[in-house]
Length: 123
Image (cartoon, rainbow, N blue to C red; front, side):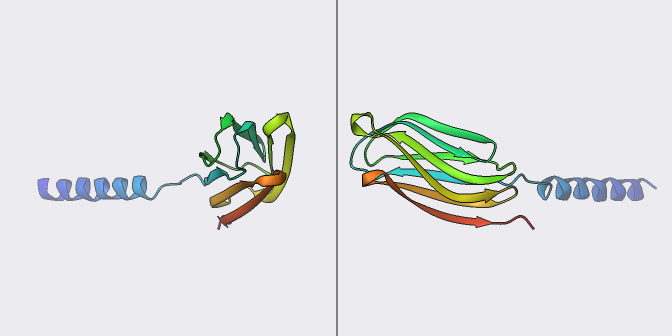
């Protein structure tokens, strides 16, 4: 009887471990902003569906990493103040809820940017 009881407890523990290790995981997008403008940028802001993030400044050649979770759908928008206080705003790709992966945003001279998404839609 004790052997059967231990067996059931062992099976229950194994099932619990399996459930915990394969449980629901929230979908995230790892975003990296690379400043390749040749100068520092100020007041960097990245808007995405339902939220935004940013930094007071990003030095020339520096990278800024941030992890987001997308709610809803909409375009990514990047804005910052360049040398001399000139404000730049650049529209990027559309993101949808449930997507996950990486998005690289490369800020380029002349107020331009490259967006390199490596995203997978939710199943």
